[in-house]
Amino acid sequence: MKKKILLVLSLVLALVSVFSLVAYASEPQCTHVDANDDNTCDLCGEIIQAKQMEFKFDPGSLGQTVPILCTGMLGIFIVTTIIIAIVILLNTILEIVDKKRKNKE
Image 1: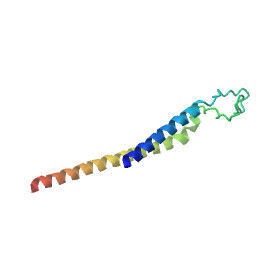
Image 2 (image 1 turned 90 degrees about the horizontal axis):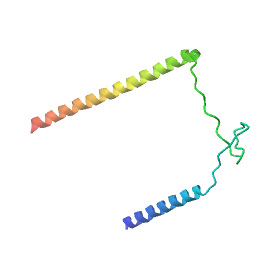
Image 3 (image 1 turned 45 degrees about the horizontal axis):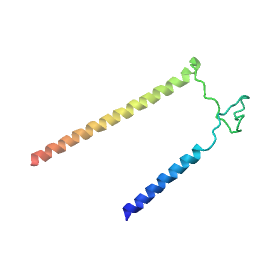
Image 4 (image 1 turned 180 degrees about the vertical axis):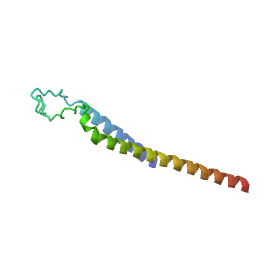
């Protein structure tokens, strides 16, 4: 009975996903032209995302960014060290337990 219910549910899920894909594919797609730079498509009127940020090198901001960078790298180093220490500790404990089991046998 459970297998039949599972089969019916999986078939319904497959049909729903196929119908949703077909419905989405039948919608007309707009190429979004924005000639006047008002973040609105001139063809369909849909709001267009703003242009991506431009990244540049600014030596004046190094005084603010370098301490943040170093703090993040130090945090990563500390967390990695803690993980390595825990793995070594667990490995040592398991070796001791394994030796005790062998000695009892």
